[in-house]
Length: 487
Image 1 (tube, rainbow, N blue to C red):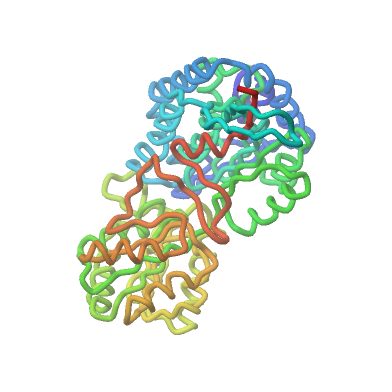
Image 2 (cartoon, helix red, strand yellow):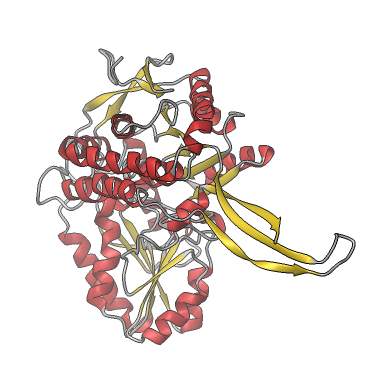
């Protein structure tokens, strides 16, 4: 049976392409509002079948040599590379990403993550021997010990809509590298790309049941993928509200969790900062994924001496950005994912106006006749207790808040429920690092919005639980076992 039938995309369960018992639903291009394809709607029983298939495949896959697992991941990366352009075109159609983003940051990063975890790393290490005196536990002796990373088991990967390649690849590849099997539940808005990833893994030789993909719009699809008794761990990327509900289910059964949740990144900008660098960095919020990214510096804390200049230049930057068809080379800002999300983002801007923020750029719907477009919007004269400063908007909207002294800037940055990625801009590097260490965030960019892809990624507070990326992902998808013996 092929991956697609006359009606649409099939589910991938136990190495078979399966007709969905729940029928199909349309995947819509957010730029044109046209149907991209038909995604399968799994039933609760089909999701449980997928988890059972992953459980059945776990024993053999977990005992497969790490080098063999790595070879499957390497071949997957090669196959993605061979199919790069059609995969990127599909990702663009599903997400509304610009061509550069779809190619470089979606499919390109997805392939890179499979390549990264095709590198075998040691999964065990010696612990210094312990010398024990004679006593109630026995005779005097030396105890040797070894720490061994073992697979967690069956991992449910619930992925985000903003990047249907990099996000699932960042879960699937390290999970498989460590000997786990996976059930992937893609975001309902753009699941077709994740099925292409499953095709690549199948072609690369991943055994039946090692990778399973089940999609659907119904809440019960995700619930079944999380609550199945065959599932040992849940890796989730998405909103804090959904993450909290998943955590409650995981807590009842003591399932492992890896949660990458919301963000409200603070950019602390001091008077001595390079304003051009600041504007270019913060400006990515307007353009990159149309602001639909949890790491965006959406809450700008500007010291008084630079505040007016920064607001003026950010407004000018936002006004220069071309909004429109993401397939056009001149386009910088594409659509947001859906009409409902566009309405949500616009309602936040209106709330900001009502609470006293000044709209200095954007704020009006772009003139395109079709597509879910939001103008890059800058809100000035904000206060940290405004709704636009407290809640994750997940769109091309930036709010600017003034502060006077360093201590006030740090306090404002930390006065949030979130703590994913913050930023500091200052010409005084010593101060920048001093401030960075006091920010309650899982990561801090100093004079940059760039990322080191081996650095641990995750959040403080309501921004998540656990860390992944680089070797930290191998840790996240494994349990540590101690083996002790007499020396």
